[in-house]
Image 1 (tube, rainbow, N blue to C red):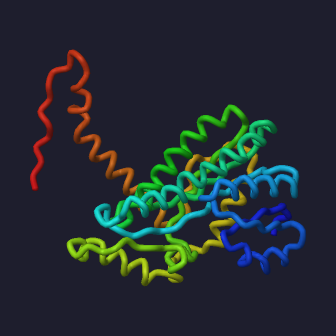
Image 2 (cartoon, one colour; image 1 turned 90 degrees about the vertical axis):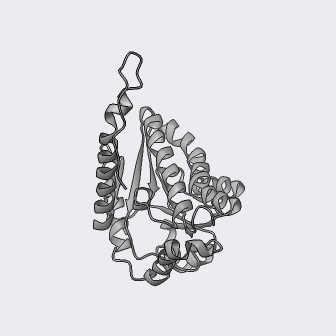
Image 3 (cartoon, rainbow, N blue to C red; image 1 turned 60 degrees about the vertical axis):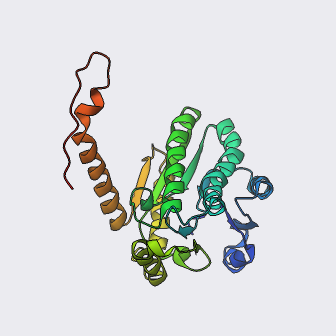
Length: 265
């Protein structure tokens, strides 16, 4: 809508066909499963050949997997990390050389408030997104001297298909977690299509922020729920750390021993 040239990708590229045709030659739709290294290489090559360069990379691939830590299998956990962490990193490595060469470019990492909001049942999702954010923050420091910017977007609950059957999955249930994780499973099922956030407005904000040539914020929360939950989590972490500050500092050589705070049930 703003006149940019856009490469849109999906595992099933047919879902993009009608939308792409509506924008003429300004949209190139390509098949891409970010967990497939060959497809990543092909997509970046085809995008660059079609439009000459890639100015902005948006890593948006993701899905929800529900299950307590004890319920989630190694295979399930690896699959979530392959999508959120390894998949995005493959694309970053494929695109960065041309951005570094031109000394300009922006990488947008779509994360979630869930990397801060700890809820039973979101173990694999939260862990992979926390890793995704740690990698992204480090990346920002590494590429800044090359003129490349990184933006971590932390949306709250927006009305996308993320809670649908096609984009969410669940580990096999153990009875001992029925009362702990069960409510989360039912919440995810009930909220599909009812989330309060407008994804179109969120996308507009991202475009507006990235269009500014100046420095980007490292983190961009989107949604009142995102801002409230992230700030509450940070305040809770700070309060917990402050309680143990004297103990933490007491490990230095020459420091006197400090009694840990007494805690009550």
